[in-house]
Image 1 (cartoon, rainbow, N blue to C red):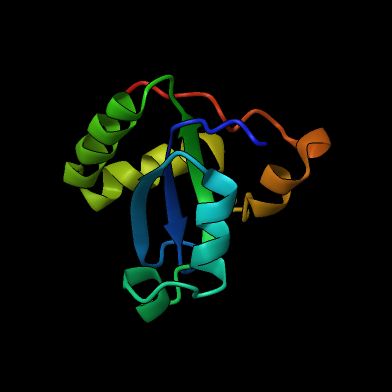
Image 2 (image 1 turned 30 degrees about the vertical axis):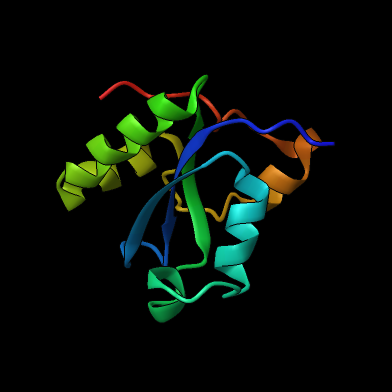
Length: 111
């Protein structure tokens, strides 16, 4: 069985496109749901399918608090957060699902 790890993440429809901030304890499953439009909602409606930023945290309560903080930020601040670790807005899905290719995007970033 896979260990659950709380995480905050951002998805985008395209570079500088529609953004979605979320929290989950199973990032691979949740991103797959967004990408495949498995669940009706914001990401399906606006075709928000690219994982552009994520940060693992120790506790789900911390993840929820971080998500709420980021959701309150301006769009410009969210874009800065993404571009600090992912300046080309690559879809991190491949790196996430291929652990040997992971390149360190799992670190939490200061505000």
